[in-house]
Length: 313
Length: 313
Image (tube, each protein chain N blue to C red):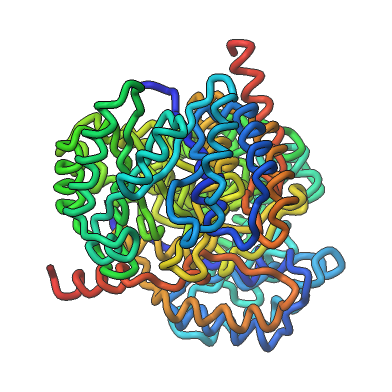
């Protein structure tokens, strides 16, 4: 089992789309650069959705264009339909993230069509992308995979079955998303196992929210099941329109602290990562940033461990 | 492996001793009653320490006396020396909690003597308590077991060795305490295993802080190793004098949500537990209360799960 864990920073998309404030485009670009310089090699920089519905994402094309200039950075963008996927491709995205909700009700609320129709849309997108001259990785996010604020319980068998149908469309990778943050560790174990049984190594990633304070415990449960890729968000920014009072994504800083402390390799420099909070705090003064590590400071034991690892003791 | 998990609410002690405000005695008593009515059968109601050093605990005797009237409640009190232990016994405490720090430096800072001297003190207390007519359970908390803000890394072998010496004094139970909140899940696994190898089932409990946001992930790691008892604090109140900016204990509400969701039995009614926050918030308006479940509300899926369990599906 590899000890490398791949993190995808979704702050510029999932974080900013729910923010009270609007981060200026130039700040977004500087922030993406800072995140990349801290060692985040995969960043979801925005989404190609209606600027009327999500005004915070209206400048995604410009941000993406600038992000492509950052050496070594894998640039991801989200889209919810063929038109958005085409825009992501035309803009030069390396990775397309596409949500497919297991909950019919959430799917209708989120993208205006049911689960099967969204899977058919995914198939059309894959077909179109594969005909283009440039390759683009296609990641499907199986949303509301751990419960839905509208439908309640989402059975693991249903998640596995949707994941299987999505894999048949020819996507490259599948993520399971705890869209509203209802997951608990035993459920993460069960749903990940059911999905692995159905689609094997195509399941690569978990997208977790920290709504109930269980985000990192759920990440740990995923790690135990062999998951080696996670979405996370600097400062835990974000939230969920269907869970009032809910907090956002799992906190990148604390996740990196946990993973590196446990001996996993993320390639991320925690001090530089913490420094990237300043720009975010300045641009969005009304949006509270979370992070235990940021509040308490990197403990002495963390540095010592890294030094021991370096010296081979 | 039993599915019952025993929680000890340490809010009235560990939470209030670090609070900015002073909770009035009558409110403390009402709060202890509310916590007990929510199903918390073990509560650390205060500490018998110098009121000059910890003025918030000056009324521990009165609170303890009232707490003894709550039917079925196991009443715990903390003391740091023989005099305090005698006071706890005289007041009628069912359980004495006694801290013994693995870190020499922290031990001196916390109780004014080194680790060995504190173990000798424990032995004297055990001897004295066992000669009294009434039994009193004696729990030793092995503090700074996962790192120290003053000494840095605390080796697992040293923790196990201190735990072994403490067990020889004749105490009933041993808890491992992450006093400053530096623990990570792999370390919890390693230190718990090393301690279990040294003292077996005498290790019963973990006392975790959420400083780095890893509190519940660490609790999960403990559960995996067979730990079935935890300290926690309503609203995650508390903190650590040696870790500025650090947050407090793991949050009782979120821990109960996690455990009950995972199928463990705590005996605690989550709705009533959340209701017990009101008094705390009112009495300590300057002390922010944490809890994902309190902020987002108990999700639909939690109720449904309990109903399924009840109906046997």
